[in-house]
Length: 228
Image 1 (cartoon, rainbow, N blue to C red):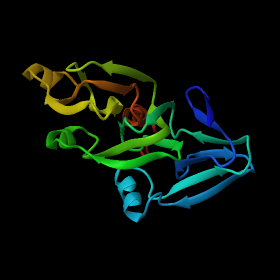
Image 2 (cartoon, rainbow, N blue to C red):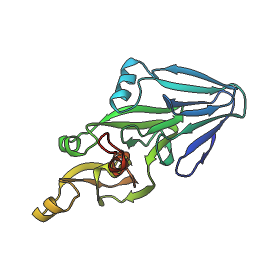
Image 3 (cartoon, one colour):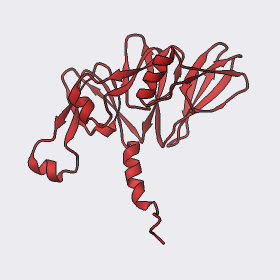
Image 4 (cartoon, one colour):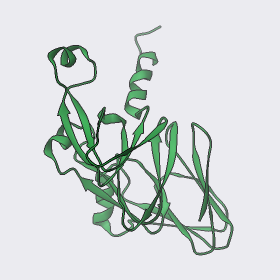
């Protein structure tokens, strides 16, 4: 499989497939495909696995697209302005992503729900207890809100992040929640009561404009029924 990411702030990943190669996506991500691609829809591993993906923010069913000839082409488009990042999995590494981060992947990539191990991290992180886990072999394409910054944490190195800006991380990264220190910071800082603490080793992908913050920025400009 060869791919190219196009579209700037409204990205699409275009995949070129050889005969027999298969891509899969969440329902609705496919933007176009050539006539020599065959589509099949199923739960991708049984009803329980499908329900697990639904709890993690995606759909119960996956679409599978298989090339019937060499040179078949299919495009997967992001839902919101941002970036599409390719992550190569080799069977030894796993990535934890925010809810609804999955866009598309090669057939050998496994998509499962992931439970936060620490109670505080699940309760106060803003993302809940259930995230998505990507493992197996192949390339997974994740959609990121806004621009993306990749940070490589060394062993023991810590990074403090506003929870909504965490897009994805290596499974090796330790995730916890820490209360903001200082009464003035709590009352007037405007950063909320808790920050995420990410401890290395491992990579972290930071998103610049979480979709929730984009919505908050737009809401004041939406006319209401009371306005004339």
